[in-house]
Image (cartoon, rainbow, N blue to C red):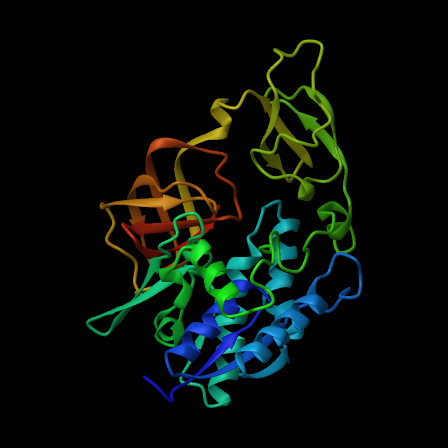
Length: 358
């Protein structure tokens, strides 16, 4: 499709740079666009925004493509960060990268790109899009260790129809090799980790700026107090590190894990042993469902699901599903299913959509 204009979200990383490279080689009119989504403290030691912008501009220069920056910080704060704080306040553990893709990269960025005359947008996500009989499907990236379909499961038909993921067909090692051969300066740049706006900064310190700290008791399921917590928002289900209760006099020597939160009592419920029954779930319910096809899959069928990123697909039955809520029954108990995280449904390599675990 030469001469079609595609605007690539250049993040400063190697994946988006190679995305632009591949599209240019295919004959597209490619424009690079850097999204600035956070500016509260982008001058501190933990924020990489400035360096990422420099790296994105350098890649565009080597590729010989137009490059511009756009500021979506206001949209990000309204649509992503406010929800992030609401979820933490409610005792859940949200995944803001899922919301960022649906609300910023494939909504605010897509709208901006279309106004600039783009036919499509492209990002460096490890995922694929397939069109079948006028319907668009989201497929896993071929590099199983890098597949990012989990983070894209809230995209709809319109968004997928306008999206390209060129590196979804490649292995990460191939992407780095292509970048090196093309002379891209970020060919060896380390992959970004963590939540986009927190970066490498200490999580507890970051949250304290926005939410009040409310310490309380750590208790066993029987109600026995075994320690103090710093605030429920700092802990997630299945957490083992940082509890400060390594051993108790009448404990059984097994490590302690966070099993639940009681918002009403401001208590953190902790248990001993990785396979404690309170850490295992055969069922889950999810709300705020989003289905890529525009409608829920048929209930009563066997599928597979992920309840967190990087998890191996777990066989399950879709017990019930309507437009907004669904429930899953797993063949094998799932460990530390966490409210606020996304349950994402798959039919083989096809990502069907998902919802927020409750």
